[in-house]
Length: 475
Image 1: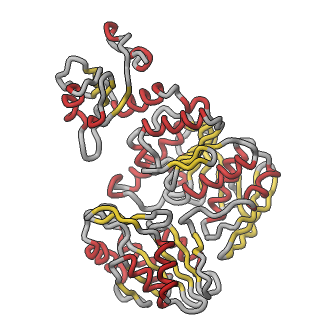
Image 2: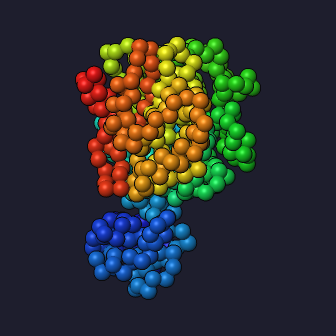
Image 3: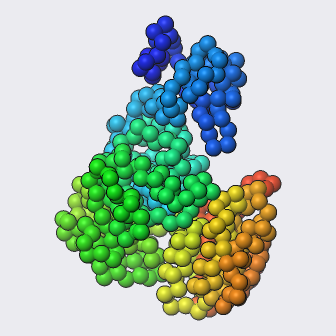
């Protein structure tokens, strides 16, 4: 590909230079590549411009003078990188109908639901998200909720090659703030909710909200949760077509009625502008009516026939690590859930608190190198809802696991229920299984779909399903 095909205003003498690739990682620069200097959260790529030049980079795209003969100075290298990556792969997003889902909780569930509905309607669908990426039924690994601009465009091009007509993607606040999705145009985007998370990065909730809002400036239609406290601020000033969904307000465009929650499923009536539809799904949880209403609204706004919605939900299976029931063959229940925020933990605990049971036992921790202020809040929530709390490690990363636990315990002083600390997560899970009696519900919160644990010594394999099986075998 020639330079002029990638950069419109390139120096005339270089227009026909053959470009062999694009990267923002100086460690993998090859001869003929364009190297884009990006000033990141922890590392400034401009520091590695000379190294990229010596490795054979044809051009250095930068935001400031790095003193190299082949530099091209731009106003915003992040956005230019996103544009270059799109052009390199033939602008694949223009050949797909893009659907974006953002919010603190529910992104994964809504994305899988939408994919399932669209496939029921006969479409080929790609998915980009937290658990995994998918091209129709082919599963590809996922490193981040939203991949880098280069990986994203590469994935979209594979979807186009496979004949996909839709791409459903989770769009994280980090990706929006860092312009990883810059230049994409979304047919429909959805907002699930906004609660405390990622304040280690965004610092304030207003910053967090502003990052989320960027998605809707690039969307034709916005599907928004009007029950959320940030709905008014988030929707203010948008020029796109706004449709609302709600479990509380009769004024919403899509509203739920007659909600019935069970441990093994959910059912309700969705009242939509095009008619009413009965939704029954094997996915449990207090949040399921919200996620389901959001997914159904997206599909209906995309033109899916109302008559297909009921059947699609009936055929859905649960999402790994989202209120996932682990088979035990015993007279107690084990649930694995990704809840790692105050709101997420409260939702999953309240869901199962309302069901017939003996005790509600929760095991949870908090991630290291992340927002410390949510730790005592999660402790307070756990002790106020559960009947027994086991505090343990999540992904401590570079932090001391004990120090993280101490932060959690600050919110659990004078707890009305027993609180036990078992620092090692494997031992903690086994402790919960050993103490379980008839009718107990055990919630293993925080890890969800993850099959690893990040320690200060490195990443280890840890699949909670395997630990539960081991513990049951040891009983």
